Image 1 (tube, rainbow, N blue to C red):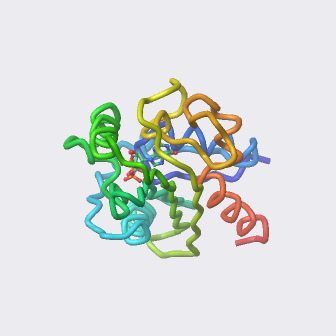
Image 2: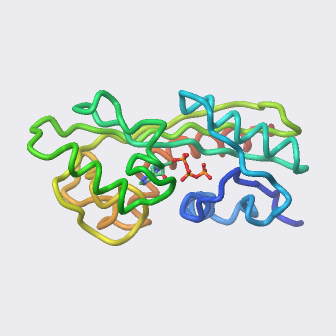
Length: 196
Ligand code: ITT
């Protein structure tokens, strides 16, 4: 029996790799890089859910099968929740993680309130229509200087509560147990296991 296929509505290879590892071989996990005909979806929403819906609906309208989107980001209390839904372009250039991290470090310089959380919203869709949506968060704090080389994005600046190392130091195995993405995906997998 072939594995059921789950198409992730992303071009971020790190997200796909994390989701693939977390599904533990139960799904064939692909993303839109396997479907070059798919257009770039403009993320014009102002919430994670709006953007997750735009990606899930846009891609599932073009591709047959089960599509899962992931819209995620970092919310920093001392910055009023920024970078939030604009996490991927915070440094001025879409997807430029070193510049995003440099801006975050600069904005946080000298601040004693360092609480933050990663948030992930996922939308499961088929044929341009939503089946369900889910979200997960992980609480933690922002450190002053980047540490570690694993993961992606803001991982070198974020220490999850209960730990003294950043996600970039803890590595994939630990991150995939604790992360916002794993908490949202656990609900997705439960939903699918119940026969959606
Ligand atoms: P797609 O829209 O193609 O899925 P993207 O990277 O642009 O890829 P988002 O719009 O959801 O995705 O933005 C997510 C940004 O939030 C990402 O670029 C990082 O800056 C940050 N982020 C999300 N999850 C993260 C994680 O697990 N670790 C570190 N940073 C993360």
